[in-house]
Amino acid sequence: MNEIINNILTRRSIRVFKEEQIPESDLNIILEAATFAPTGMNAQSWHFTAIHSKEKLAELNSLVQKVLVTHPGADPGMPYIDFLKNMAEAPNFNFFYHAPTLVIATNSINSASAAPQSDCTAALQNIFLAAHSLGIGSCWIHLLVLISDLPEIKDHLTALGVPLDHKIYGSAALGFPGRSNPKPSPRKSGVITIVK
Ligand SMILES: Cc1cc2nc3c(=O)[nH]c(=O)nc-3n(C[C@H](O)[C@H](O)[C@H](O)COP(=O)(O)O)c2cc1C
Image (cartoon, rainbow, N blue to C red; front, side):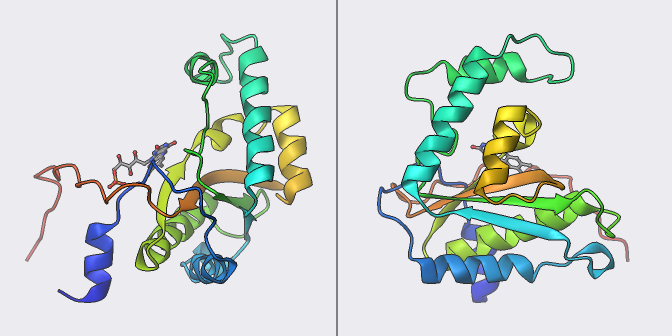
């Protein structure tokens, strides 16, 4: 099997990370790989905000926890809010599994692409695969997508570098895996049709 296919088949979502920070040189390669994903109309209207600081991530986690815990809940505009509040009430809450780096993928609300979400998703998959090829574990972290319009979160993310006129589509936790690679869950059958 060639190395690329092997890399795709052996990547797994990692949810236990070592404390050690990933090298900036590796982060740069991973981010470059993100920017080489395809985009609708070649818009490239995305932005990747990489938080490569455990201190800044701890501040973000504390803010997210505070905002969720103090949210009144039961908001029809935020269908998952009660579930999220419940999660945030855990004293050891950490929404990115204590990974030392988090990359937030966003796209312009005025993108020329007809599919800004898909563009970010393609970039995130490049991030996961590039990271895995360098021995770095990763996991998609969706929480920020669900709460990014809450004013305190929006202001904090803007201060960190997320462009004001961008929407968050996903984020990637990155760090050295704290355990051996989990086994893939069994693949569902019947999901492929080849027409000859
Ligand atoms: C759109 C999307 C959102 C996801 N959100 C989360 C998340 O918030 N937290 C998490 O731990 N995993 C998240 N995942 C990872 C999935 O749980 C994981 O990919 C799936 O269980 C299959 O495992 P694998 O990645 O090891 O193949 C997400 C994956 C996708 C594609």
